[in-house]
Image (cartoon, rainbow, N blue to C red; front, side, top):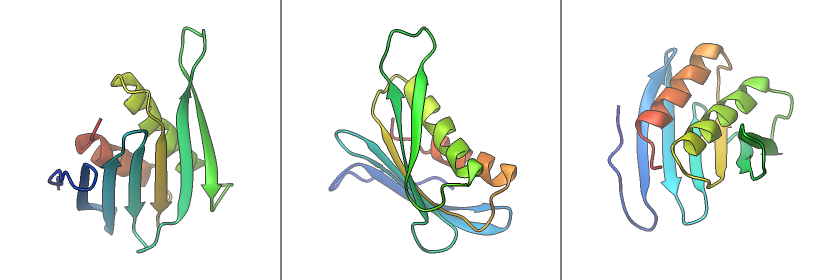
Length: 124
């Protein structure tokens, strides 16, 4: 596990992990204005989501997570995205996240495995 950070054309990491017996390919990219995470167990992009921190006067930060393409009725995909944007925000970055999730398994264990792999290899 663990991807080597590459610098061209944008900083990125590309690696694979096993989650519940499923090979999971991940790519994490840091663009000037957002982060991109792609995680697939099916060889395609799957559902694409967008997440950002809402700017406001509230003491507690709020986050907006929305589906751009794909499954709109899958709470686990929203949960992965929300956990990652919260982690990005708590690390001091206000950049939004675009994430692609093509998963065979939509269990809590898969959610935790993807969040853990991305956080361990983060570019923020």
